[in-house]
Image (cartoon, rainbow, N blue to C red; front, side):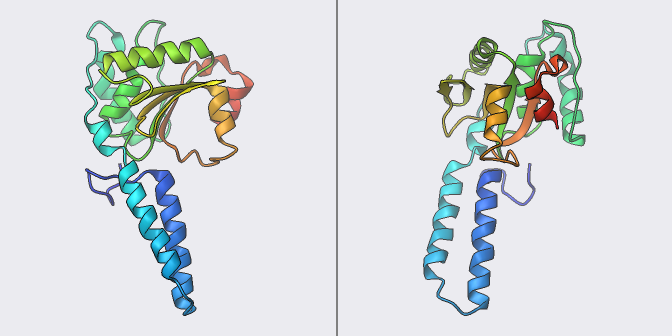
Length: 204
């Protein structure tokens, strides 16, 4: 989380970039003593919109519980600390240990999902949608609202989505319009060991 924003209204990374650009342009025009009323109104509008789009309150109200029977649940605090201290974390565990469903919740518990979505990729469409539905159920969220999924030809994502599941192809396609991936505060690349071309590009 960004210490420069209040806990209640953390501005999304995407909106921060837009606001910073408008502030820079406004300062330049004022410095050159050019008319700036229109640009100032545009900045005020962007700030108001950023406040409305904040994910902070939504993320703070998501219920986080870790099923005790899953091995990953016992390591939740340790993984959360690792995420806070490192820009890249590799989590290895056997199939069925709960990595796919619990890691997004661990990231949420660690304080992420406020300045951008927690993005989770899956190589296959069916896995992406079924995991999103599972996490929505576990967190008592609405599928397609707080927890969403986007695959080819089908998008169940809203402006209130905090945790987003998607195929790796969708994330790769998004880099065409969001090169810095500012829509996301955390990215979880699941099944990275499969080393598909999409995954290799994303990791790069």
